[in-house]
Length: 191
Image 1 (cartoon, rainbow, N blue to C red):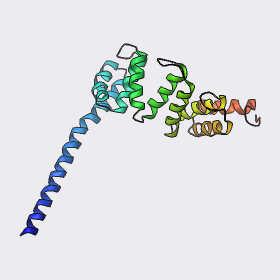
Image 2 (tube, rainbow, N blue to C red):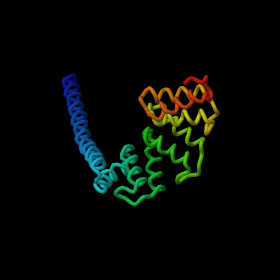
Image 3 (tube, rainbow, N blue to C red):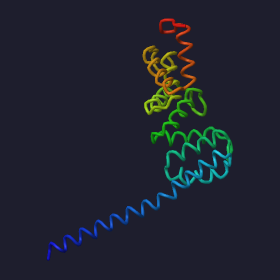
Image 4 (cartoon, helix red, strand yellow):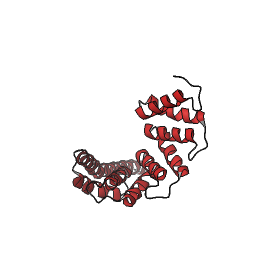
C-alpha cells in the first residue's frame, strides 16, 4: 500500500511540474510574440508602436528589447533623440551579453558620445562582441590593435580579427585588409 502511495504521489508531482511548465510556456509565448511584433513595427518604420511594444519587455530585463530601446533613442525614432538615454539602454543590454549592444557601447566609448572618450573601454566592449562572432566588432577591434588605440599595437592580433571579419564577408574589414597589405603597414607589402 505504501508503494502505491509513493507511485501516486510521484505521478501527481510529475503532473504538477508538467502543468507548471506549460503555464510558464504559455506566459512566455506572448512575450515572444510581442517582440516579433515590435521588431516588425520597427522594420516597417512604425517607431511609436515599436517603442510601445519594446518598452515593457525592456523594463522586464529583456536584453534584446533594451538594445532596441537604445536604437530608438539613439536615432530619435518614436522617441526624443537622447544619446544619454540610448546609452543607458545599450549598457543594460550589453551587461547581459547582447553582442550588438556590446558593439554599440564600444562605439560610444570610441567616439566619446555620452561618455568620456576611452579607447581602452572601446576595445574592451568591441572584444566582448567580437568574441561572440560579430563581424563589425571584429573589424573595429582589429583596427584598434593595428593602430595601437585602446590596446597595444599588435599587427598579428590585428590581422587575426580583421581576417575573422573578412571571412564573414564584412566589406569594411576586407577593405581595411586591402589597405593594410597595399601600404605594407605591419605586414609585407602585397599589392
